[in-house]
Image 1: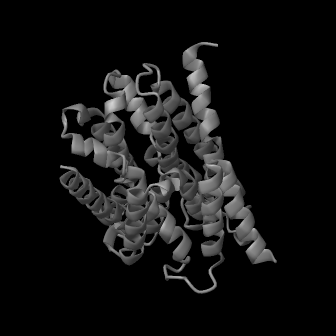
Image 2 (image 1 turned 135 degrees about the vertical axis):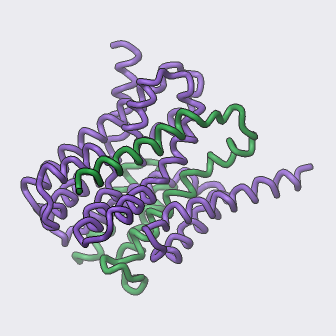
Image 3 (image 1 turned 90 degrees about the horizontal axis):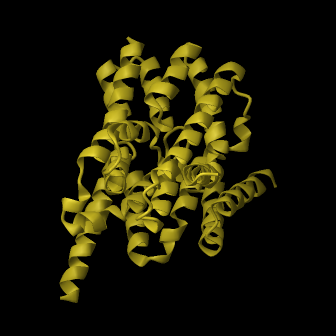
Length: 232
Length: 102
């Protein structure tokens, strides 16, 4: 098996556990869309074109509640804006790729693909084929998301609410953060960001994620500057 | 109208990722910027985690008798010791089901 294919499959295998919540979430999204009165094609188009779980729910909910297009589009954008940080964070690793690769990998970049690839890229900075890892993880999540949405659209709410499967979403992100829980400065940032997201939860346009992220990154910057000053 | 909305939102989401990935040259940036990027997961993920645990479906804060809090603490402990993603998710889910069904 060529190295490229091996890396592609390694990406798929590493993202598998993160797909546990993606399947029920996709099904729920499809079911919610039908409940809100959208057509199967429209719901599937949000998965294919917008491709961002939480932002699609925001989009469908605001659109059906009669919010103006401007508010719907802005809110969807704000919910997705955290991807800006993922892009910047990967720019150094992927800067030598062709335009076509950058287009494809940008489309496939998600929270989960970012999380597993970030770990892999940090350990394999000098591997010239490392983008195949992101391709594998990103593509597989994309595929499962499209299939899950379709199942939700056609079968409706087959997942009983009682199981609390939406709880698996925060659980996955806890699992993605555990390696950082061994460093005190990261724990501080995690607690600040988490507290801010609760305080700012009702901020307009669902902006609490990006607001909390930017404020806590500013705190991280202050900590870095302070540490540097102390070491001098 | 909805099709315009879907396409515009899709293009914006794509451009957010594409432009930041293509046109930020972190190698030419202040080393401090690079250092700050290592904090991205710690700054972004908690803003998804905390409301997912503490805010109920009506959008209200839910701290009293919330089974997700204990389940998340158990998941975190299992995660920190096992460093295993699947073990962390399954421990949290098992703890959550144990609390709500028993």
